[in-house]
Image (tube, rainbow, N blue to C red; front, side, top):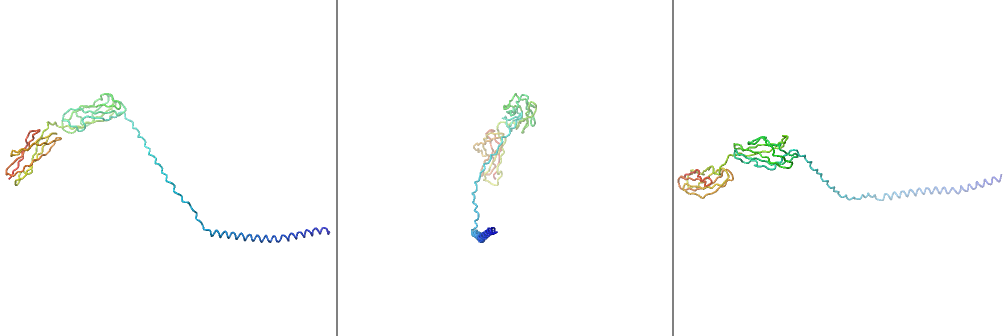
Length: 298
């Protein structure tokens, strides 16, 4: 029995020793943990204080330079070529003509009117094509007339009509149409003339004379004689003045570009009493004196 108690006592003693050694460690550990907690708290507080004292910095956004303006080149407008218009079979293009519009012809005068026409179509003209009267003044022309032959595209033909100016003076116009060999109309031409009465050789047809004061209250006084000269056409008139006292002034000339009237004047200063006259004499082309104009000084 004593042997078994001894070992047990030894175990009990060792356990107490170990326990006694461990108790101070636990206390110290507990104390160290509190200190650690306090240290951590102090560190956090210090960090918070540092953060409060550090000024807040606004974020610096760098200024960006504007990008260079890009110039977009303009796109040229696309111009489409015009669509070609198909040429018709028959197309007449005038080239020239005789006797332009407004030409004067004496009444009942025969003349040939002609037109040079280019074939501007795609068909060849032939002798079955015609020019035929349409409307207006016929001027004694034919009702219709065939083309003289073949005319290929691009070639020309002279269309000639024998005509006659009407017997009454006036302005006249007549139209003639162009027809294909199928009798289909494809163009027209016309004649425009003035029928006028025949004009003889250049001449002064009349003279009308006046004076500014035929019966003055007293003289001396200058008198102005005026004569209106009428002609039948273009030409030059030579004239002079004749007075009742037998005085004759030097000849003078007056040119007319066409039939018409122009006036000339002559001044005579009279101081004596009596009746006096002045006459215009046409040396050329008439060789003729016209009516006298009289004045009376009291």
